[in-house]
Structures are given as C-alpha cells and as structure tokens.
Image 1 (cartoon, rainbow, N blue to C red):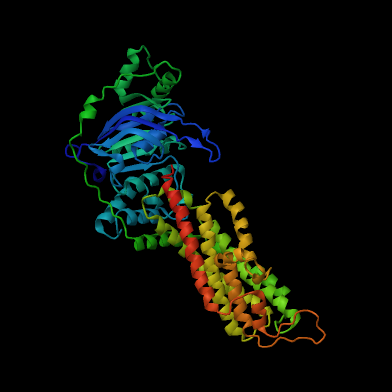
Image 2: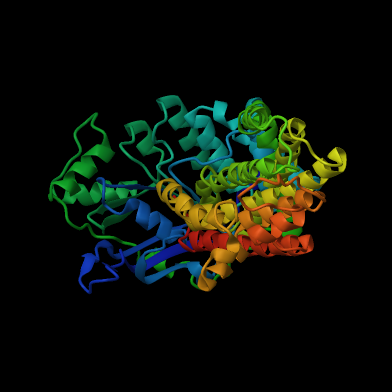
Length: 582
C-alpha cells in the first residue's frame, strides 16, 4: 500500500486530546422551567496522544464513551464539549475536509448502485473527474488493494457484511486521509472477514494514524494492534503501547493468564474496579509534532451544478434498477383510479343543468387524484435517503441534494397527469376534445409540480415517518376546502380568503374549471326548473368564485412551488445542522 502511505520522516503527524470533557445538553420543557433531561457527562477530562504509525485499539465496557471519543477526534461530535483536540498545531474544527476520515460502525449506502458506481460517484465528488489519470489510477489501486475487483459489478445490497465494510474503507480512503478512525470495524463479521479488515487497517497504519474501537476482539486480532486505550465510565484509564499496558497491569499484580484473551482480561479488570487509573508515559508524544505543519491532501469541491448532475446520475441508476416497481406504481396509482372514475362518469356533459354538478365533481376528482398522488409520493422521498444524506454531510451541498430530489420527481409529474387525462377524458363529452385534453394535461402537470413541492416540503419539515403521516392530512384539509369544490369561495369569511393563495388545490381547480367552462357557451335551462339555472360556463365560474384569468393560476402555481421548496430546504438544512449521523 505504498500509495497510501505518508513519508513518516517528513510528515510526522500527532493527534492530541487535552482535557477533553463531553456531555449531553440539558433539555427543558418549553412550558416548564424544570429540566426534562439532566446534563450527563460522557467523557471526563480525557487526555491522549497518538502519532504516525500507531494502530490503536480503544477497548472498554459498553457505555464507556468509546464512540463519543472517536467522533470527537474526528471533529464530528455535536455534544457540549470543553478541552481541545489538535493535529500538530491545528485544532480539529479548523482542519480541512479529507485530513481525518471516520468509518462508522454501520454501513449506509444507496444499495441499488454497484460497487464501481458508488466509488466513481464518491471520487467525482471528492477528487474531481474520474477520467483524470491520477484519480483513475488511485481508484483502481483502492479496488485492487481492498479486494473489491471481483465485486465491481455487484450491487451493494448483494454484498456481505465484510465486503460492505471494505467498501466503507475504500470510500474513506479516496482522499488519502492522514488519520483514519473506525468505529467497531469488525462487529458483525465472521473471523475471516474480521481478520481481512484488520489486516488492511494494519497496513494502512504504516504511514497514517489508524484508531479503532473494537468490541470483544479475539486474541489474534487484538495482538495486531501496537497501541491500546482503555476506557471506563467516560475516563481514559490507559493510553500507550501494548507492552506498556501489560507492564502496568503486572505492577499491580494483575497477570493475564496463559491462553487468556488479553482484551477480555483488561476489560474485566477495569469494569470490576480492580483498576481505576494507570500511569501514562505520553509526554514524548505530546511534545512531538508541535512545530510541524499539516501535509497537503488533494480534495476538490465540485461546483453546485456539477453536484446536482452527479446526484441525479446516482438517483437515475437506482430508479432504472427499480423500473418494474415504478411501472407498478404508475399502474396502481394512475391507471386503475382513472378507469374507475371514467367508468362512473361515462357520457356526462356540462351542457345540461344536471350535468353541471357532475362535471364539477369530475373536475375535482381529476385534479385531486393528481394532487394527492404526487404529494404523497414526494412526502416520503426523503424517508429512505435521509440517513444517507446525514452520513454524507460535507460531500455535497444541502441545496444540491434538495434540488436533485425535486428534479427526480419531475418525470412522474409529466407522465402521471398525461396518462390520467388520456384515460379519464375518454368517458366524458368534451368540447374540442384534443385541444381540451392537451390543456387539461398541461394544467395537471403544473398542478403535479406544485403538489410535489408541497409534499417534498412537508417531508423535509417533518422527517419522522409517524409525524409526517399525522401532520400531512391536517394540512391537506384546509387546503382542499379552499379548492371551491365543497364551498363557494365567495361565502368564506374575509380572514380565511388569503389561505386559498397557498392552496395548490385551488389553483388546480381554478385552472381546469376555466379550461372547460369557458368553452361552454350555453347550458340548457328547463322552463319548469325551480333551482338556480346557469346560462353558460362563465356563470358557473362566477358562482363558484373562480377567477376569469387563467394566467393568474400559473403565477400562483409558481408562488406555491417556490414557497414549499424554500420551506423544504429550511427543513433539510435543519437536519444537516443536527450533524453527522453515525
């Protein structure tokens, strides 16, 4: 792994944690001053030092603070902290992306991609074009060294746990970090895959600092590490070489039995209170590297448009592999419902008084089916990808991810309304059928786009599946009441009228109603009729409180689309600010 090494004599790297204390935030109820969750200390005044060539195993009982310590070293801890963490002279929070990489315990990928597609995407995002010779050679080298060559064309969901862990390592090594931090890299792996992963990490440590938490490692795996950190109840009991650790325990008359797992022995000793603190001889390490600068690591921040292009490319690969599911969703959501509605409204016409109400119901169902279908598809667009997005924080901009999700919905906004109109309007008597069907399709496409923005915005604001499922129907109710299908808009109280201007249902109904009723010049009125008698289509529009200018609806659609997208971006940005998920 010569390409992954740093020249130790020229680039001595030291990472130091000095008096690091980390605690949870005190949470208070907004209606009471009393705290609902008290502050809890997770790391207590921890000081440690690691340098180039160290292959460190952090061990300890569950709840000792190991993962919090790792994420703090990586600069990705979002809890309240004091003390300092520095690499040479530079605080971790000021270190540019790529110098320190964290490999979390749980692997998160877009499972429909192949191994090569995932690595190409990450290379393009982090280093620049994969067609550059240096980047292409580096990617090829990673695939060969991490034994992923035979898996290049396999989808990620078909990989074993060990293979996914190697893919996570490859992803982190794309930028050749100087410090690699792994959270329980062997958890859930069989002995062969665990040995394979540890072997790769040991080779990497020859030119880097590699820090791992390990849970119940075997003796063979534990002996691969040259340094060890022991943690218990948020305290760092010991940090140093394996031989120093053994000597410290023997001074306390604690001898590890022959053929007994040293890691298990140490954990038992610090868990039962036999050992509370061991002497650390780390002064030489703390003095090392204080005057050295950090090496330059090649990274590339792609421009906003290129990020969107790459994100759309990745999403399109996933959609193509799920194309059968896409067609099934189209069939169930559009074709079946449109055939049912078409069957119920066979032969109706808006040129009779009895047909007026039927046509109003038909137009409402046509508009609402498209609106509800697309808004609820968009509502769950982030459900599967939110964890992936929070894992990839910093790889691309939040706005690029949001725009990609919105653009990926546009094909459905185009195909579904057209398919719906082609089927459902066959049963109804339309004036100028082809032209009216075309206008209906255009209006419903715009309605679908606004509905998708509404659903996407709600999904980003309320990311919990249970919450969004409860909130969305409550938001739908006032918005579709404003459509004018159930109540005359002129009958609404003045203070409620502004609500219609943020209702995509209103703009959709107004648009399709104008398209149809403006073509109805006369409506038959029986001489013996005792109810309201509409003379023409304009009278129907006026009675229901719709506008006489269809262009206003398209401006309204633009306003609603921008409004909900801005709210959705705010919601997604709020999730990003919660920090990296591990």
